[in-house]
Image (cartoon, rainbow, N blue to C red; front, side):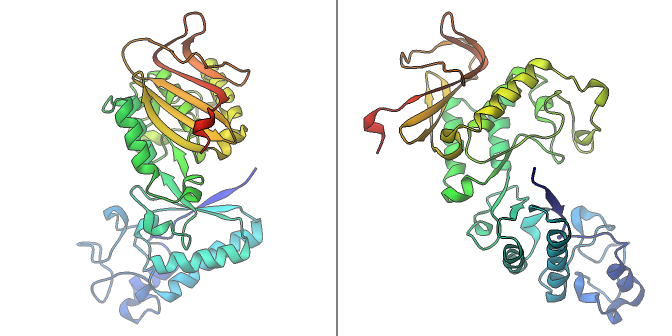
Amino acid sequence: MRVVLDAVFNHCSSSLKQFADVMEKGRKSEYYRWFLIEGDFPETEPCNYECFAACDYMPKLNTANRQVQDFLIDIGLYWIREADIDGWRLDVSDEVSHDFWRRFRKAIKNQKEDCVLIGENWHDAYAYLRGDQFDSIMNYSFTKACLDYFAWDRLDAKAMAERLSGNYVRNTEPVNYMMLNLLDSHDTLRFYTETGCRVNRLIAALALEMVYPGAVCLYYGTEIPMEGGYDPDSRRCFPWEESAGDIDLVAQIRTLSALRKNPVIRYGTLRLSEEQGLLCVRRIYKGDEVRLFVNMTESPVEMKDTNLKLPETAAWNLYSTTNNQLEPEGYLIVEGQIKKEEMQ
């Protein structure tokens, strides 16, 4: 097991001793420039300093300030030295100074080379993913595509393949293989709730997440499955008395998780397309392939590819081996070997 901590370096509590010192001394405080204040003293009515989400109890740190940078870098190094943590998830990372992140990365990687740095960035983060700041980000572009396809019926298979392809080409291959892919989080509505509590759609989305390049992030309670609306409802406590959950869903997640050991899924190149109205995701590696088919149409689809095989490691939901049909909201994962002409 590896441990990744959450670093909130964009803002702090108004109770932080440095901010409290500024509240008391104003411009005369040695920490005055640690914050972004317009006036001699911080004021809350109206608020004259920058803060997070318009909350005056969370003042923003001036991360362009060298002293603030040193203070935060020391925190990042402390937990590696004292607890040997394995990474940092970086909160509100796109509102923090690029210069700080470059210094932070150098210091962290010098201390522990394989310490992972994952930014919380909800948009295109190319500027942060050029090898000098983050290793990857929380892949909310993947989340949004999955919501449009599995939950809100805004995309058909062709449009979904194009959306995922467009997102994928934003970044370099090493970054794509390190992306933290997620369906939901503490900051979003629960994916299960977004689907209208249709568990088969959740399962199909999980199948895509497991086959797609990158690291899989499962939000606690997905295996129950837990419901949850807008924050803070998305942060409900785990209902331990119901921990048995949906046994079929738990079994599906175990089967899908086991597929992550397959070298084709770990290292294979990605190809996305639409076939027979189905979303087709292919991973190809050293002549072998894994294919995922997802049916989000309203009708069963007969699988016409006679080369499809169902090895022991295959996985499916709402697929009939009798008539070779994939039902609506179902998925099918199969393995095989690619044709010689595709091995370029």
